[in-house]
Image (cartoon, rainbow, N blue to C red):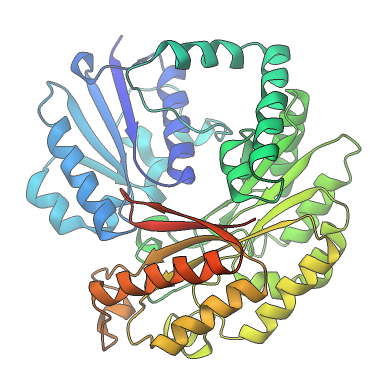
Length: 413
């Protein structure tokens, strides 16, 4: 029996990939271990969304090369930074959109990767376990005790923050994840991820509903509906996102849903359905990444430029259910963005009562934005982000800077 060590860096979707990879090896008789020193095979699921993330992945590859194991590089790095990867690594690679072909690398395995059910849990990287983490893992394995623990934890978080707080969502109850699609239809000028994830491939509606019922049967009451882009779900298989969500919320059991990666154009397209859906009080959050509050910048980003339609959509959702948490993302310092255009985005965020993340623009080779001039210097971007922190605090937000990843989390009090 061969020992396999799996490690992942990246978004939740890549952690779901790692969990499915782990199930694939387990079902084919491999031993999943937590020490790379004892591994025969190391699978590293990489990230390359930002330049910093790519550099971290390359650094980790060099670390794994020191071990006496076959190293296989998966995730987004092989498709996005192929030249840099090839300069330090000559082994086997498989990028995100090619994961279904994993068993072509392991040709003797009886169960194919395609036949492994999708993951619903976030993979946990191995680390040195403290007595506290061992205790928590023990609690999580006991459903009744875990439910009580979650209730107490959520009560504390609600007291510190509120049910609408982004930190309540991030730190509270862990969801049962349902990945409804892979790939996306967008062609954002700043994004390199599509190279790795490919175009939209929706999961059959009945399969998504069955995963949802499975989570309910296991006692879950919180579900994250996720994809690289959830909005266009079903457009390739003669269905749509509202149809899927309505089938879920028709279930009489008590539960809540978070919809992630819901690009504004699709939120606007489905606003009539969304208005009806959020009034059921079963949707607790919608992640609608605006990226900018300025029409010119949105056009340069190759995103939907109807900023007033987006504003109307967000205000209507707030009105339909004042308890819903509307999350967003903003890229600060996109090429040619003026100070006034930056301020427009700040005004848009405050006016529409959004919480979320502010990222500094990261130039990536091979994107359309790479050729847009003038570039905003890192010094100016830092100045803008500092000012954003100040103006958001003035308007009643909590703002936290994540130094290791160089971005802000902002949260409406």
